[in-house]
Amino acid sequence: MHQEYRQGEFEISTDPARLDAEAIHQFLAYESYWAAGMARDVLEKALAHSLNFGLYSGPRQIGLARVVTDYATFAYLCDVYVHADYRGQGLGQWLMGCVVAHPELQTLRRFALATRDAHGLYEQFGWKALARPERHMERLPEGYYQTVG
Image (cartoon, rainbow, N blue to C red; front, side):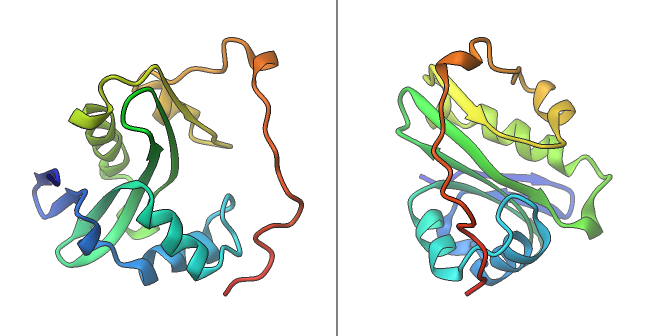
């Protein structure tokens, strides 16, 4: 069952049918630092295999938080954004509050994320620097998102 949350003119929904892949792709591929150059088909596959929190002003998609998860023990939060025209209204905090309160994410042992510049936002919801960074590894292919498709 999909979750929906309202705050004034804004709504957050986990209904995948409401996602505007074009608006999301436009932001991620052309305005974000973490997914610059992401191809549209890659985004669509990622959305299809994630728990997505779409942020809307009326019918317009203005933000997103994507959670990759097994719904039991682990989740990875990514692709979190609020469109520049709507920042400064507390929507990012509201979006994160909805993510951490989602009923399907309450048994997680580990909820990870990576950020360059939003540590303050995520710390408000319990995220901290890695306690044991020496235990974590990653595999990053060079230049993966260099061509936007």
